[in-house]
Amino acid sequence: MTDNPTDGHALVEIQMGAAAAPAPAVVVAPTLTDAAQRACEDTVRILAEAVAERGVAHLALTGGSGGVALAESLAPLIAAQSEPVRCGIHLWFGDERFVPAGDTERNDLLATPLVAAGVPESQVHRLAGPQDASGLDEATARMIHELETAGLTSGGFDVVHVGLGPDAHVCSLFPGHPAALAVGVPAVAVRRSPKPPSQRCSLTFEVLQRAGRVMVVAGGAGKAEAVRLGLGTPDAVRAPASCCRGRETTWYLDEPAAASCGVEGR
View 1 (spheres, rainbow, N blue to C red):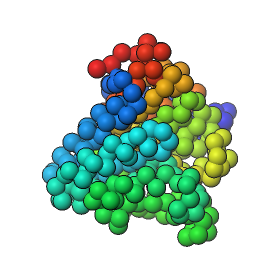
View 2 (cartoon, rainbow, N blue to C red; view 1 turned 120 degrees about the vertical axis):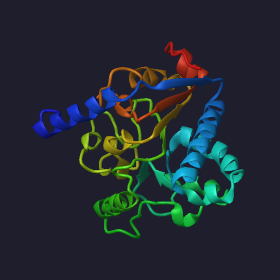
View 3 (cartoon, rainbow, N blue to C red; view 1 turned 135 degrees about the horizontal axis):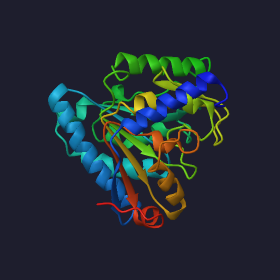
View 4 (spheres, one colour; view 1 turned 30 degrees about the vertical axis):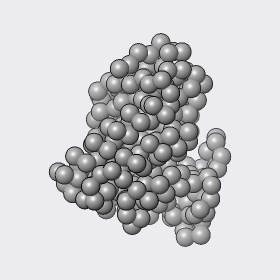
Protein backbone atom coordinates (compact mmCIF):
# COMPACT_ATOMS: atom_id res chain seq x y z
CA MET A 1 0.00 0.00 0.00
CA THR A 2 2.71 2.51 0.96
CA ASP A 3 4.65 1.72 -2.25
CA ASN A 4 2.25 4.20 -3.84
CA PRO A 5 3.80 7.70 -3.49
CA THR A 6 0.36 9.18 -2.80
CA ASP A 7 -0.16 6.71 0.04
CA GLY A 8 3.30 7.57 1.35
CA HIS A 9 2.50 11.29 1.48
CA ALA A 10 -0.82 10.56 3.19
CA LEU A 11 0.88 8.32 5.73
CA VAL A 12 3.37 11.05 6.63
CA GLU A 13 0.58 13.63 6.90
CA ILE A 14 -1.55 11.45 9.18
CA GLN A 15 1.31 10.40 11.43
CA MET A 16 2.71 13.92 11.71
CA GLY A 17 -0.74 15.15 12.70
CA ALA A 18 -0.93 12.56 15.45
CA ALA A 19 2.61 13.25 16.64
CA ALA A 20 1.84 16.97 16.90
CA ALA A 21 -1.23 16.36 19.07
CA PRO A 22 -1.01 16.35 22.87
CA ALA A 23 -0.24 12.95 24.37
CA PRO A 24 -3.38 11.05 25.39
CA ALA A 25 -4.49 11.05 29.00
CA VAL A 26 -5.50 7.70 30.49
CA VAL A 27 -8.38 7.02 32.87
CA VAL A 28 -8.54 3.55 34.43
CA ALA A 29 -11.73 2.22 36.03
CA PRO A 30 -12.58 -1.19 37.53
CA THR A 31 -14.94 -2.25 34.72
CA LEU A 32 -15.85 -1.25 31.17
CA THR A 33 -19.18 0.07 32.49
CA ASP A 34 -17.31 2.27 34.96
CA ALA A 35 -14.95 3.49 32.24
CA ALA A 36 -17.90 4.32 29.98
CA GLN A 37 -19.62 6.19 32.80
CA ARG A 38 -16.56 8.37 33.32
CA ALA A 39 -16.38 9.09 29.59
CA CYS A 40 -20.07 9.96 29.44
CA GLU A 41 -19.88 12.31 32.41
CA ASP A 42 -17.07 14.16 30.64
CA THR A 43 -19.01 14.06 27.36
CA VAL A 44 -22.14 15.66 28.76
CA ARG A 45 -20.12 18.40 30.44
CA ILE A 46 -18.36 19.25 27.16
CA LEU A 47 -21.60 19.14 25.14
CA ALA A 48 -23.40 21.40 27.63
CA GLU A 49 -20.52 23.89 27.48
CA ALA A 50 -20.63 23.85 23.67
CA VAL A 51 -24.38 24.49 23.60
CA ALA A 52 -23.97 27.34 26.07
CA GLU A 53 -21.27 28.92 23.89
CA ARG A 54 -22.55 28.22 20.37
CA GLY A 55 -26.08 26.87 20.71
CA VAL A 56 -25.05 23.54 19.18
CA ALA A 57 -22.85 20.54 20.00
CA HIS A 58 -21.63 17.72 17.79
CA LEU A 59 -20.99 14.20 19.10
CA ALA A 60 -19.83 11.20 17.07
CA LEU A 61 -20.89 7.84 18.49
CA THR A 62 -19.10 4.52 18.14
CA GLY A 63 -20.27 0.93 17.80
CA GLY A 64 -19.04 -2.31 19.34
CA SER A 65 -18.95 -3.26 23.01
CA GLY A 66 -17.63 0.18 23.95
CA GLY A 67 -20.41 1.87 22.01
CA VAL A 68 -23.10 -0.16 23.76
CA ALA A 69 -21.65 0.67 27.17
CA LEU A 70 -21.42 4.36 26.24
CA ALA A 71 -24.99 4.59 24.93
CA GLU A 72 -26.36 2.95 28.07
CA SER A 73 -24.49 5.38 30.32
CA LEU A 74 -25.09 8.46 28.18
CA ALA A 75 -28.88 8.31 27.84
CA PRO A 76 -29.81 9.12 31.47
CA LEU A 77 -27.16 11.83 31.63
CA ILE A 78 -28.59 13.53 28.54
CA ALA A 79 -32.14 13.13 29.86
CA ALA A 80 -31.08 15.03 32.99
CA GLN A 81 -29.91 18.06 30.96
CA SER A 82 -32.02 21.11 30.27
CA GLU A 83 -34.14 21.20 27.13
CA PRO A 84 -31.83 23.69 25.35
CA VAL A 85 -28.90 21.33 25.84
CA ARG A 86 -30.83 18.25 24.71
CA CYS A 87 -32.15 20.09 21.65
CA GLY A 88 -28.72 21.47 20.78
CA ILE A 89 -27.02 18.07 20.40
CA HIS A 90 -26.34 16.59 16.97
CA LEU A 91 -25.43 12.90 16.75
CA TRP A 92 -23.11 11.43 14.13
CA PHE A 93 -21.29 8.11 13.80
CA GLY A 94 -17.58 7.42 13.60
CA ASP A 95 -18.41 4.70 11.14
CA GLU A 96 -21.46 2.98 9.76
CA ARG A 97 -22.18 -0.24 7.90
CA PHE A 98 -23.80 0.08 4.48
CA VAL A 99 -26.76 -2.15 5.28
CA PRO A 100 -30.50 -1.41 5.29
CA ALA A 101 -32.03 0.89 7.89
CA GLY A 102 -33.01 -1.03 11.00
CA ASP A 103 -30.50 -3.83 10.35
CA THR A 104 -28.98 -5.09 13.59
CA GLU A 105 -25.51 -4.44 12.14
CA ARG A 106 -26.09 -0.68 11.99
CA ASN A 107 -24.38 1.47 14.59
CA ASP A 108 -27.13 4.08 14.40
CA LEU A 109 -29.39 1.84 16.46
CA LEU A 110 -27.35 3.08 19.42
CA ALA A 111 -28.93 6.51 18.94
CA THR A 112 -32.36 5.14 19.91
CA PRO A 113 -32.00 5.64 23.69
CA LEU A 114 -30.47 9.07 23.13
CA VAL A 115 -33.44 10.18 21.02
CA ALA A 116 -35.70 8.84 23.77
CA ALA A 117 -33.66 10.96 26.19
CA GLY A 118 -34.49 14.12 24.25
CA VAL A 119 -32.08 14.50 21.31
CA PRO A 120 -34.23 15.45 18.27
CA GLU A 121 -34.45 12.67 15.69
CA SER A 122 -33.93 15.31 13.00
CA GLN A 123 -30.44 15.87 14.44
CA VAL A 124 -29.34 12.26 14.11
CA HIS A 125 -27.17 12.12 11.00
CA ARG A 126 -27.57 8.61 9.62
CA LEU A 127 -25.77 7.10 6.63
CA ALA A 128 -28.17 6.37 3.79
CA GLY A 129 -28.72 2.65 3.35
CA PRO A 130 -29.02 0.60 0.14
CA GLN A 131 -32.74 1.36 0.00
CA ASP A 132 -32.06 5.12 -0.17
CA ALA A 133 -28.81 5.37 -2.16
CA SER A 134 -27.60 3.83 -5.40
CA GLY A 135 -24.50 2.51 -3.69
CA LEU A 136 -21.84 3.10 -1.07
CA ASP A 137 -20.24 5.94 -3.05
CA GLU A 138 -23.47 7.94 -3.15
CA ALA A 139 -24.16 7.31 0.53
CA THR A 140 -20.64 8.45 1.44
CA ALA A 141 -20.89 11.54 -0.78
CA ARG A 142 -24.13 12.50 0.92
CA MET A 143 -22.53 12.09 4.35
CA ILE A 144 -19.57 14.21 3.29
CA HIS A 145 -22.00 16.93 2.20
CA GLU A 146 -23.73 16.80 5.60
CA LEU A 147 -20.40 17.06 7.41
CA GLU A 148 -19.35 20.01 5.27
CA THR A 149 -22.70 21.76 5.71
CA ALA A 150 -22.40 21.40 9.49
CA GLY A 151 -18.91 22.92 9.43
CA LEU A 152 -17.29 19.78 10.77
CA THR A 153 -14.60 19.66 8.10
CA SER A 154 -13.08 22.82 9.55
CA GLY A 155 -14.37 23.40 13.07
CA GLY A 156 -14.31 19.83 14.28
CA PHE A 157 -16.50 17.66 16.50
CA ASP A 158 -16.88 18.59 20.14
CA VAL A 159 -16.53 14.94 21.16
CA VAL A 160 -15.78 11.77 19.24
CA HIS A 161 -16.37 8.41 20.95
CA VAL A 162 -14.07 5.71 19.63
CA GLY A 163 -14.08 1.97 20.22
CA LEU A 164 -10.93 -0.10 19.92
CA GLY A 165 -10.56 -3.33 17.98
CA PRO A 166 -8.16 -6.08 19.09
CA ASP A 167 -6.18 -5.28 15.93
CA ALA A 168 -5.96 -1.61 16.99
CA HIS A 169 -8.47 -0.43 14.39
CA VAL A 170 -10.70 2.55 15.12
CA CYS A 171 -13.92 3.51 13.35
CA SER A 172 -13.57 1.47 10.13
CA LEU A 173 -9.91 2.39 9.66
CA PHE A 174 -8.21 -1.01 9.69
CA PRO A 175 -4.48 -1.85 9.78
CA GLY A 176 -3.08 -2.02 6.28
CA HIS A 177 -6.36 -1.06 4.59
CA PRO A 178 -6.15 1.67 1.91
CA ALA A 179 -9.13 3.55 3.35
CA ALA A 180 -7.14 4.30 6.51
CA LEU A 181 -4.89 6.59 4.48
CA ALA A 182 -7.66 8.71 2.96
CA VAL A 183 -6.84 12.43 3.15
CA GLY A 184 -8.57 15.51 1.81
CA VAL A 185 -12.02 14.20 2.71
CA PRO A 186 -13.91 13.97 6.03
CA ALA A 187 -15.32 10.50 5.33
CA VAL A 188 -14.30 7.55 3.19
CA ALA A 189 -16.05 4.59 1.61
CA VAL A 190 -14.57 1.36 2.96
CA ARG A 191 -14.79 -1.73 0.79
CA ARG A 192 -13.62 -5.25 1.54
CA SER A 193 -13.52 -4.54 5.25
CA PRO A 194 -11.64 -7.34 7.06
CA LYS A 195 -14.54 -7.38 9.49
CA PRO A 196 -18.07 -7.92 8.14
CA PRO A 197 -20.15 -6.28 6.82
CA SER A 198 -17.73 -5.62 3.99
CA GLN A 199 -19.06 -2.18 2.93
CA ARG A 200 -18.84 0.73 5.35
CA CYS A 201 -18.38 4.48 5.64
CA SER A 202 -15.88 5.89 8.11
CA LEU A 203 -14.69 9.25 9.36
CA THR A 204 -11.09 9.87 8.34
CA PHE A 205 -8.09 10.82 10.45
CA GLU A 206 -8.36 14.31 8.98
CA VAL A 207 -11.61 14.86 10.89
CA LEU A 208 -10.67 12.82 13.95
CA GLN A 209 -7.52 14.87 14.49
CA ARG A 210 -9.54 18.13 14.42
CA ALA A 211 -11.94 16.98 17.15
CA GLY A 212 -11.99 18.93 20.37
CA ARG A 213 -11.95 15.73 22.42
CA VAL A 214 -11.38 12.16 21.28
CA MET A 215 -12.46 9.55 23.82
CA VAL A 216 -11.23 6.00 23.27
CA VAL A 217 -13.13 3.45 25.37
CA ALA A 218 -11.91 -0.14 25.68
CA GLY A 219 -12.20 -3.06 28.05
CA GLY A 220 -10.87 -6.55 28.55
CA ALA A 221 -7.46 -8.19 28.55
CA GLY A 222 -7.98 -9.03 24.88
CA LYS A 223 -7.56 -5.33 24.06
CA ALA A 224 -4.31 -4.94 26.02
CA GLU A 225 -1.96 -5.21 23.04
CA ALA A 226 -4.12 -2.81 21.03
CA VAL A 227 -3.98 -0.38 23.95
CA ARG A 228 -0.19 -0.64 24.07
CA LEU A 229 0.09 0.03 20.33
CA GLY A 230 -2.51 2.78 20.40
CA LEU A 231 -0.70 4.70 23.11
CA GLY A 232 2.63 4.25 21.38
CA THR A 233 4.35 5.99 18.49
CA PRO A 234 1.89 6.95 15.73
CA ASP A 235 1.77 4.22 13.08
CA ALA A 236 -1.28 4.43 10.83
CA VAL A 237 -0.49 1.17 9.04
CA ARG A 238 0.18 -1.13 11.97
CA ALA A 239 -2.02 0.54 14.60
CA PRO A 240 -4.55 3.09 13.33
CA ALA A 241 -5.59 3.81 16.93
CA SER A 242 -2.20 5.45 17.50
CA CYS A 243 -3.16 8.20 15.03
CA CYS A 244 -6.62 8.83 16.48
CA ARG A 245 -5.65 11.89 18.49
CA GLY A 246 -7.64 15.10 18.66
CA ARG A 247 -6.90 18.45 20.23
CA GLU A 248 -7.38 16.53 23.48
CA THR A 249 -7.50 12.75 23.75
CA THR A 250 -8.43 10.54 26.68
CA TRP A 251 -8.40 6.76 26.84
CA TYR A 252 -10.96 5.29 29.24
CA LEU A 253 -9.93 1.73 30.09
CA ASP A 254 -11.02 -0.98 32.45
CA GLU A 255 -8.40 -2.56 34.69
CA PRO A 256 -7.79 -5.68 32.55
CA ALA A 257 -7.14 -3.60 29.43
CA ALA A 258 -4.84 -1.27 31.35
CA ALA A 259 -3.05 -3.42 33.90
CA SER A 260 -2.16 -6.26 31.56
CA CYS A 261 0.01 -3.92 29.51
CA GLY A 262 1.36 -1.81 32.33
CA VAL A 263 -0.71 1.31 31.67
CA GLU A 264 -1.34 3.56 34.62
CA GLY A 265 -4.07 6.16 34.72
CA ARG A 266 -6.03 8.38 36.99
